[in-house]
Image (cartoon, rainbow, N blue to C red; front, top):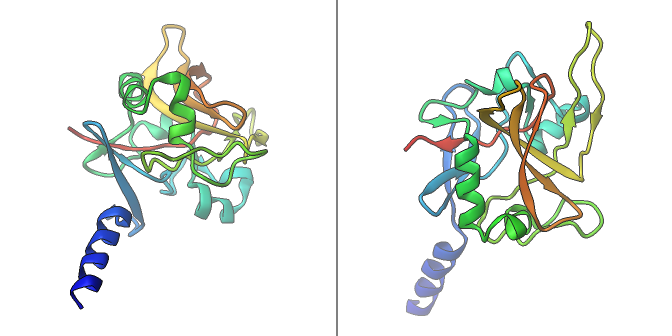
Length: 194
């Protein structure tokens, strides 16, 4: 009996994770602490204006969360959480080994194309939800990149009116910040307010 109890406690210590429930819709998210930051370990899946399911399929929302325009992403995180800025992402990359290794450390161990899975060494579980193109004159933009790429909006804008996002690629262990138009639909990972 004593041996079983010790094994159970050890297993829970290794395998259990924290979670957070969004009071707005009752959805629960895994949470992970990396360095001094606390992150949702899943993409946000809160339905709002300016959001869509990857490839327009509600089943993809269940797996990958929703995609948001940059404007919608600004205030989409639940109370106590916020959209990370570019400095938050820079700190995250440093905590997990620097930009040259961060992609591998942050990517989930399955779900990525062509052996592009990561080690998920820190429990961030990044999944490749792809992105949705901006909507022009009432026409829906195309979706692309599901299975191959993850794009996480940052709250930080560039001087020329673009917005930064963290980019992960199935073909690389590296990651970095890129900038693109705010009308595209990209994933959101919320960070807990300090």
